[in-house]
Amino acid sequence: MPRAVAINVGANTTLPGFRGPIRPDRRFAYVPIPEREPTADPVPTYGDLAFPLDVDVSAVADRRVHLDPEFAGLYGSTAYTYGDEHGVKAGPLSALEPGDSLLFYATLSLRGDPDAAPDLPPEWGAYLIGEFRVARAVTGETYRTLDPAERERFASNAHCKRADFDAKVLVAGGEGSRLFDRAVPLSASEGGATAGPLVTDLSADSGKGPWWRRVLRYDADATERLRAAVDDAQPYRSV
Image (cartoon, rainbow, N blue to C red; front, side, top):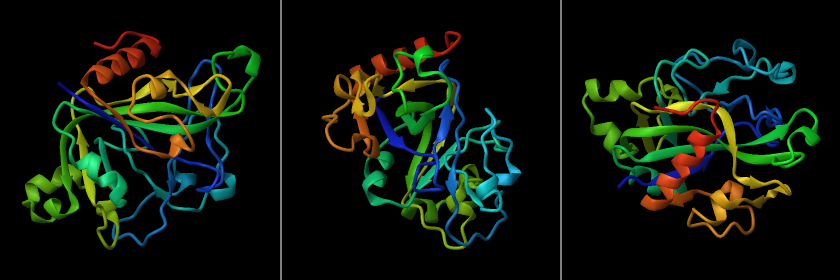
C-alpha cells in the first residue's frame, strides 16, 4: 500500500523575502527559492519566469532561481524531479518506493478579502500545492553510480545543474504527478501556525511547534484519505 511524505518548499519570508500568493478561491502561485550556489548549467532568474497571479518579483528580478521541485509544463520544465541536500529529508525521501506520494507544501500569503475565504487562515498558511507519484528515489551516492541513461531522468534537476553536485536524495515523479489547480490547506482557519486535521488527524506529526517546517509522514490508510482530500479540493475530479 502506498505511503506519503510531505515537505516544505517554495518562497518564504527568509528566501527570497516574501511568500507566494493564494486567492480566496485557492488559486495560488508556486514561487521557488533563490539559487545560492554556483551552477555549471545556466538557470533562469525570477525575471525570466512568467508567474501567475501577478506576482511582483521586481525586487529580485536579477536573482537566479533554484527551480526545485520542478513540475512538467511549468516555467519551462519538462520533467518532475526533486532533489535535497539536507540529511533530515534524505532519509524519508530515499525510502519512498514507486507508487508512493511525495507531496509538497508551501507557506502562502492570502491575497484578497479574508471574508471571502472563511475556511482559510486570514494572513498566511501552509498549503499542499503539488504531488509526485514516485517513479524512482535514489540517494546521492546511488546517483553517482548510475549509468548515463539512468542519470538522464534527473538531468534537469537544480542540484544536477550545480557546479558541485550536492543532493543527498533525488526523486523522479511519474504518471499522476501534478501541480495542483487549487491549494489544499494544512493550516487551520484560525491561523497559519495552527495545524489543521490533515496534519493532526492523518500525519504522524503532533502539530505542535513549527510543524510547517517539518517532514510530515502518512501511513497507507492516511495516504488514501489524504489523496481523496486533495482530489475533492480540485475543480474537477482527478481520474
